[in-house]
Image (cartoon, rainbow, N blue to C red):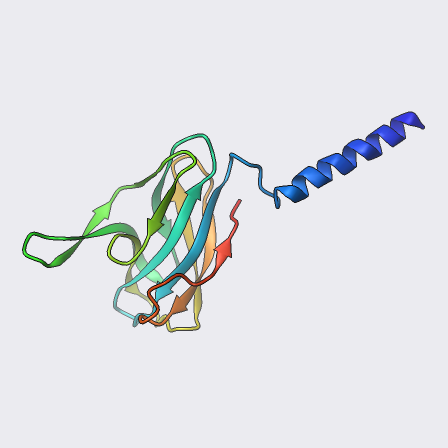
Length: 160
């Protein structure tokens, strides 16, 4: 009887600990927050933005992304050239430091959707999978916003 009672108490403590972590073990996850994309037309290019947070004690890096809505998906950095024009530079990876965050936003790092296979309009959603050096892939459902909305989507995704 004492063993059964002890097992019930330990089981309850374990479930409580898991619930407190919302299904995420502290120090081991990468989270994506406020993900969104601009509307864009088929045949053209689009971009997706988000905030990535590395909760682990180990450095990682975003090494790529993939989506069925585009022929090619790349990580880019937009920056101002000396002549005042904006250029986009393909990145092999974006460092994601231990217990740090990186914001992918207009005018900076972003996920570039090249050769869109379909229109992506405000109100639509599409799937985007992020690839990392050390962490398993994360698949997000990205909401498409009007280009006038330069802020986040309000979406908050805990990703395992």
